[in-house]
Image (cartoon, rainbow, N blue to C red):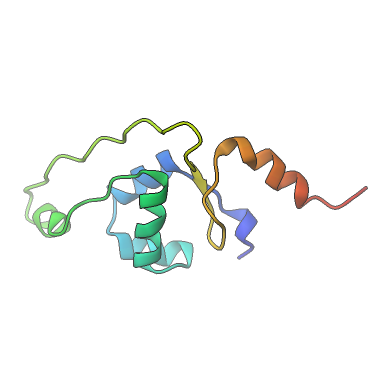
Length: 101
């Protein structure tokens, strides 16, 4: 998979983090769970605490921690094999990967 094919916003990552266990999400993105946890930290995305999925499995679903507002300049987009960046830099990244015409 080309790393430019998948870009995940912090909002998308938040939705994924609270819908499936981190190892499952990470495997789908081709990274490790610990790496994806670090990406969540860099993007300011809260993750379920230890034991969340065990409680979820028995119907005692703890409430999700709300996604806080992004801090200005904070990275908010990430793709496998890339460093998290702010959306304002995406246009520059895409332009740098285009072939000259």
